[in-house]
Amino acid sequence: MLVKLIKTFRDDLTGLLYPVTCLVCGDRLRDQTHLCSYCLNYAFVPFEREGRESGGGMILPDWIAMQDALWEFDKGGYLQDVLHQLKYNGLEKLGSALGRQLGGKLRHNYWMAPLEDSLLLPVPLHSSRQRKRGYNQASLIAGGVAEVTGAETVGSNAVIRIRNTATQTGLNARVRRKNIGGAFHLVQSEQFRNRPVIIIDDVITTGATVMELASLIRPEAACIGIVTVAKA
Ligand SMILES: [Zn+2]
Image (cartoon, rainbow, N blue to C red; front, side):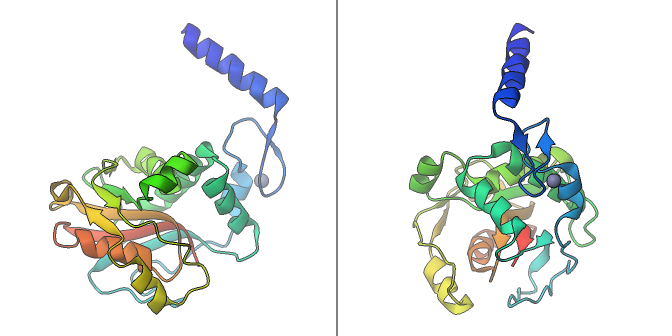
């Protein structure tokens, strides 16, 4: 009780000293989510190409049961900034808020809605990068999805990233695929056995990274879906 009181007091004080504002409209917020509920619901273009053929330079094989996202990526726009802040500025509560929003949408996914037996697999970061950043933004998003859907998040060492690849920005699909080849290692294959698995990341562009991960768990998983906050 006392700990909770102190925590509440500390949060209130922090809010007074450093008011958190919405990253999009600038409105002052009471919580630390960094996006007001209006912007969370209406500021960005909804992704409505749910299913397997989402187009946009990405063709997924037929063994991917579902690909979905919350929003269309807006190069140079507010969403790009929000995701950049999530990745580099340690806004942990923003990650959970985005995840909860994503989870809310996924519950209505026709192809593969996350259920309690589903396993969420956030795209792993290389350990050196995670140490430097202090967190994995995909794990924060997965945490929010889990909260809303009841799905389980995979243990952090089930799959590891064994190669620290440079940024894929600006590269075409073929080069990206080549770059990411062999970047992950499946440590605990039994975790995925006969489970519906949903791979989670912040943004999907050509799909090279998530497909490399998907190929790795394909022999184990019952079915595989790919879900991101944004689709470029
Ligand atoms: Zn706002």
